[in-house]
Length: 297
Image (cartoon, rainbow, N blue to C red):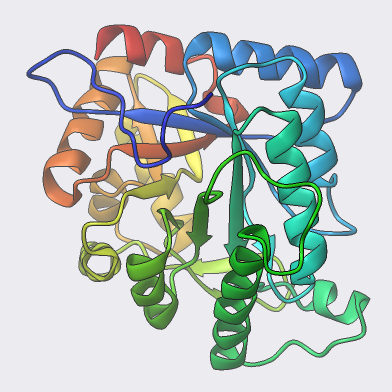
């Protein structure tokens, strides 16, 4: 059985706390199961799979395969588009994953920003308010089904299955602060014309506002860039131009990391002191660095 979703790993009695999750995609069977085993051995708290129907792997199939070769990792979509997932089908997928993993599933939901996904199921993407309303409705209905309202089999092992809400909308974060078990922050804003990319909201005051809306709820930052380098300043300067953000904001915020191992550890501690964020979801480029960070923390 996995640790409770709100649990944060303590590294030393008087040190800051840190937990890492891994977001990845399967490419081949052996590679995927090897990655799941390795993530568990390293000490990752969870393995997440993105959910963009038509553009990536099915998260629940991939996570079931990972469940078969692990025993502790939590497993969840990060995050499912509430606009294209029917609650009864979503609940069945999550309940099945919870059964085959021995109680390690996470229900990850977001409002759904990608227009092509809505179009693929014959729907027109609503405006922001409509998407947030629908996400809250799907979250509430899916949780009710998982609790026994309309789903007789399979019954999930966990009661309740933990809910992770990912997003940055003010109203969605406020709702998640009351009802979710974990909030995933990406600091991403308006969807760009390509339908996939976003503007960023990584200014310090914007991060302050997002974290403030989360209240005391555990939060996890989705790290968009992670680079071990002897020239952190150059990386932050290049990213600032690319992302149209201030270099100082990127160097302080929780969404991009660059530097030596010691510099990254120092930044993790600064982020914890300022925002109380001790959970980070990283992608594959970061995996080789995490064992050293955990060992040295």
